[in-house]
Amino acid sequence: MRYEDLILTCKDCGGRFLFSAEEQRYYAKKGLKHVPKKCPACRARRKKMMASQWTQVVCEACGAETKVPFRPKGVRPVYCYDCFKKLNSSGQRK
Image (cartoon, rainbow, N blue to C red):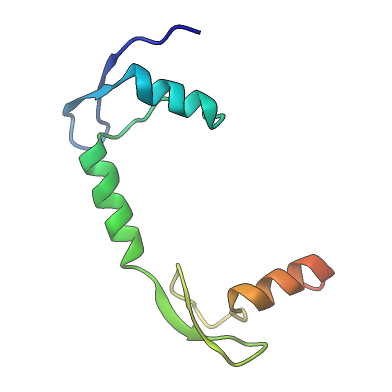
């Protein structure tokens, strides 16, 4: 397939940005079919914001301290990555 540079408009800031032919080849190689809706600066800003929203918690199963990408409400148990993976693979978690 032949790719050509595209000029897109960011849905967040309204600025125009380049979606290069090289980036399009990379997206295709990774199986991504969509075009980016946000410019690189807005994507980086969102990524930074999301990284800062992790919350320190104690795993309900093993008692280890861990971080989760959400703020628990106290209604459901919170698990570390390993315990969560074990519970999912054993079918115990609903």
